[in-house]
Image 1 (cartoon, rainbow, N blue to C red):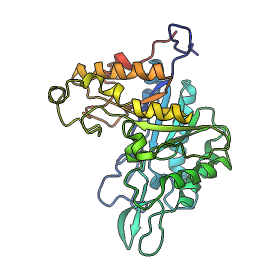
Image 2 (cartoon, one colour):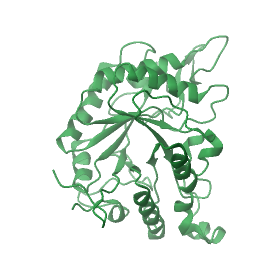
Image 3 (spheres, helix red, strand yellow):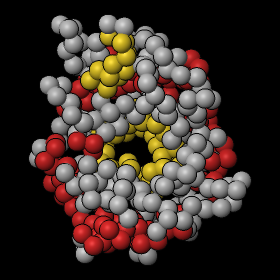
Image 4 (cartoon, rainbow, N blue to C red):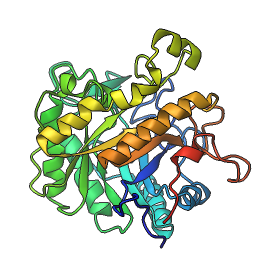
Length: 345
């Protein structure tokens, strides 16, 4: 295997990687729920060997792999779906072959879609509906216990990403919910890291406001990593509805925005003596000035020693403006790749 990339002083640089999207696709279609999950190959997909090999060649070997809870466990508290489990295993097997590592990501935003009274509904974890709790923290812990039983011994497993971007959780207590998942996981796996996202879409620049001043996970293995996300448009949504020109006119310090949006999260991690991880960031393909901003952001992540995964690659993105997927049989790089890829020592 190639040597790890190094700093000028000889120290190892933090890892860079990508999100390999596809297995979470189709959840926004009308009626999507555990009972109506869509069809594999039509509504969702999984990464191909070509994509995994491409990013490994460019030194991006940390792969955050989203999936939908409803497809992996269509009956809460019951066995995982063997077909979707096999697809995840194939991704891990392929990653192992290219020296890559997989971070499993439950891409559900703190919710699970199922039919309530015959109608598809997004239910928050621990939300009471009609006098009962359809989706409980115990269900959530059960999911991760079963996943750990399936993959704890796999050589390509990096860790467990408990939940993508929990937000607007209402009366549900995300801190208690995430602690329950950690407890359940540790019944099976005391070795791998557990990645815990913050509230309010995991925003790095609003981290302390959304999550309070203190770290909240009680991990007996001491291997918890807190996960933040960071986009550079005005509202931090990653939709980039305004051009770079319009953003710059409204904010002359735009090129410093990415670095500025790391300050709160980085300081919180330092005060709490915990590891941090940037699970998502990305910029539009069509304006190199966004790429300059991203390069400054990446340099700051390197200085902080913080691993990260860019958003996003995957075979089904088409014309999506933030896509990192290569074109023309994996030989044409997305524009940001020039700044993102690691040169091997």
